[in-house]
Image 1 (tube, rainbow, N blue to C red):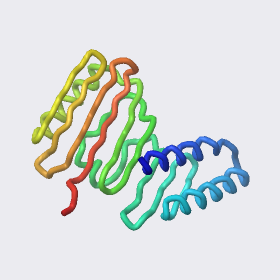
Image 2 (cartoon, rainbow, N blue to C red):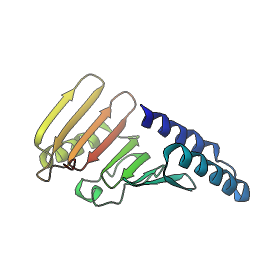
Image 3 (spheres, rainbow, N blue to C red):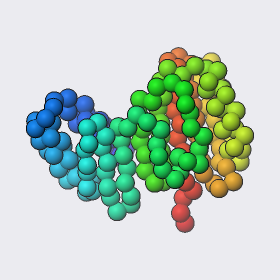
Length: 162
């Protein structure tokens, strides 16, 4: 619950930064200090992208492009629709994509289902389609699609370290 609150704080702070020039830089520095004190990590705000650096690793919010990490290179890239939000770290990522056609999602669904076929679970209802599974490297993936608003989400994570 604490992480959700912090993420909401970050999103609100990012949305406040619509100015430009020196004012925007000053607002970014103030927000960085507030977030650093709250989370105990180092924060870097670069336009709409926020990176939180902690002892456990870095987490980046606010990007609108497919993540570029070792983990994301092991997951099929979804190339349709409009990426509206990305959360990315070394151990996990989440991508939210709007304006996704159901046929495009179902093509991706079948591809993921073929590659991430261990410990799998799938569900379909009148408004949601979802699949979760692992591949032979124990990388987990959860994909879902909302038929109501044509939005897809893709979440992937490395296996937990023991």
